[in-house]
Amino acid sequence: MKENQEQDAPTVFWRIDEWFPDLSPEIKTSLKTYHEELIKYNRTTNLISAKTVFVADALHFADSILASRVIMSTQKGIKKIFDFGSGPGFPGAIFALLFPQVEVVLVEADQKKCEFLNNIVSVLKLKNATVECKTIESLPENSVEHAMARGLSNISRTIMTARKSMVKGGSFYHLKGEEWGIEVGEIPTQLCSIWSPSLIGEYKLPVGAIKFSVVKTEKIA
Image (cartoon, rainbow, N blue to C red; front, side, top):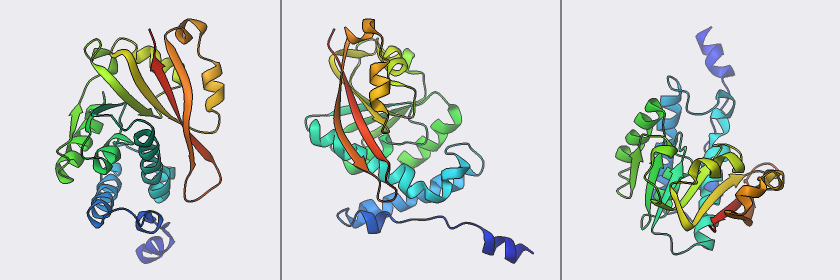
């Protein structure tokens, strides 16, 4: 009976090596280790939806790689960036792995997710990444110049949450799907006088036809 159950279990895919042949062998090895730790921890800690476990390589890893590249290609001077509501480290820990010259701060309020993040930083030896187990609102005022978020909330609520910690002239990168324009259209007029939104890049995952977007909101006041 157990053998049949194992045979019927869906395959947990790992296709990053195939999709991103330009990555160094060291980064590919680290990404695979990250994936293995994620699957292991997810059995006891709700890091990602059970529905996405088998295709985490596409929905979480490839997505974070592609979005991180969009951000860095449009803002090459980033020296430090915060990942707000980092969760299991997407995209922040991936960003740190891809761009070791950038200091990455993973901000997450959930204690169990912070334990996972600290484990990933340790296991992958990410010297440029640190974990802040706290709320976004508790960050010091005007302490953040660059930030990013994936799956945190809609753009309006996210920039409201970050309004005190972000400096004037700071940039916030939001990882969104095809309906990013609806979220931008829903930003209240009052917030539009403080934040200027723009689409900085689009991409598709190696599988599927859905288009994803990176929207930048710049704090102008």
